[in-house]
Length: 231
Image (cartoon, rainbow, N blue to C red; front, side, top):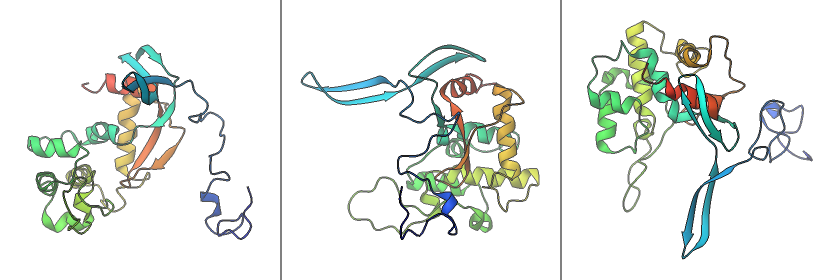
């Protein structure tokens, strides 16, 4: 790939953050979507003709045993589906929360009035500036956009507010709570290792859309983790 005249040419500041190919790169042990045998999961037909087909991979687990899987043991990011496990670290600290607060803590919400109110109620108003979700607008609005972007409208604001509340209760420094060097991430890793083994380490750690770290898991690992959700 030619970098002639590019601001991210090799040797320039920040160039190592960008891939060499717009199609991605081959990294040993990290399969891409072109390397697996995707299975058709949903086939939408219009008058008998396939119009939209969604491919993917599925796994079922009981405890630590994967009972059945198909579509390839793809490596992917759990992202927002892992919110319950990140919040598992704060079970005792959030025990006195209302059901609305607990629900918004593990939800990806639309930024409706009720959602924002529930998320904000997790913190004292003086603590609101600590929350570091990106600026966003409500997911569903009718008519012209009239609301300015706010952090509370972000789909993950409830999770962030709950984490900040939990950090306060644990006595953890809330500065840098979105970083993979913070106690929040270490506690999250401890939760995943309950199901995947104490020596488990993710192949990749990335930054999710809300700013929190997200780690790579195989489909089979995700099935094992969710099989143990209630424990």
